[in-house]
Length: 469
Image 1: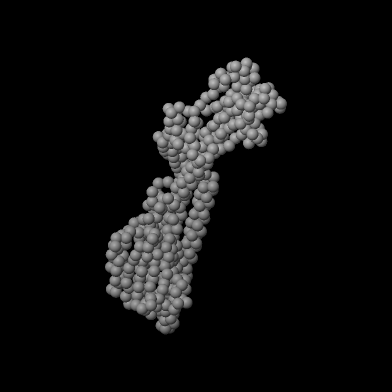
Image 2: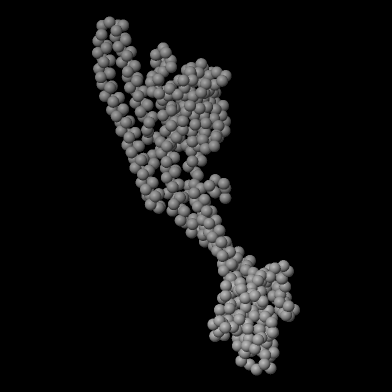
């Protein structure tokens, strides 16, 4: 899995949920192991207490000559019984909270009169099995415990009638948790696969609409026609999709309304301008007539340029994928001499060919007009392609570099249409480039001349990434 794929929302959520469940399982196992150990110790302790109470009852009820037989029968490798004149446990403060004593008194039907002493302590240091285990049982015991022996030793002293004490010694160990490797691997693999499949399905319902929305927003920023997105996914994603569809509809309607308004304005202006041209021809004075005709022609040119500028805001041309070198080569063939094409790599871009041709033509012709030559180069940077148009002209004052993109702004002071145009060339170029999701900036070169830098998103990367939801 690549780093970029790992950064997607789907993979981040999958990894986060799997990690959280793994931590929860580890904590549960640790708690289970501790509870399991406590349960085993309590069961073994109560078992030894029950046997001690039964032996104490037998000794009190049986004749003295049977006491030795009862003790021999009660002894086992894990529990030792002894009848003595002295108590093995010398103190009476119970370290178990009195649970063992209460169980023994209950079994003996003795509420308080009998002296019962309990001592619990953990064995530290080198721990070996009980001394009276046979060699075979010792080996089995060590194999089962895997050499990891930690034990609690319990000693009991129960007062017997006649001044004797029944001393009981036992040890109950904490068995290690058994971890069968094959079972654990099967459980981990099956649980992981099941979790990933389920989470992947759930995340697809969330990230699929988001990916479609991201691609639609990118296409909308390039000026492409985007069909209405289907409303799907969780409630929040559905609301976001509805908002995007509504925003797209409003933007499209806004731009179309403004374009139609400008087109209608230009159409309506043609009639009075034509009438003015006809009337100007009737003026007898040649100088006055030529001046009026020139003004009318300039106004007609400005109207046509304004309509062209408005059409640059929106258009029905469909985007196409073009080879940048071939595309610019064909464009340079239609331009005057003095254009030098430097780039040679096979970069592909998704753009509207006719609209972008006009934008680049305006930039190149601007370089030819003021610098008498133009050098065109390009390079790929991250997810975008940067086109560079250099000239050797006088440049532009620093405070005017951004202002020249405003409509009808001309730095050429002669006001001649042949040398300065209407001041819409750079505005049209920037409008078209921005409609492709890019931008254009102007900078003065240190060695002299002007540099136009056009940044266009790499349409190939943007449209091929994550095509599957």
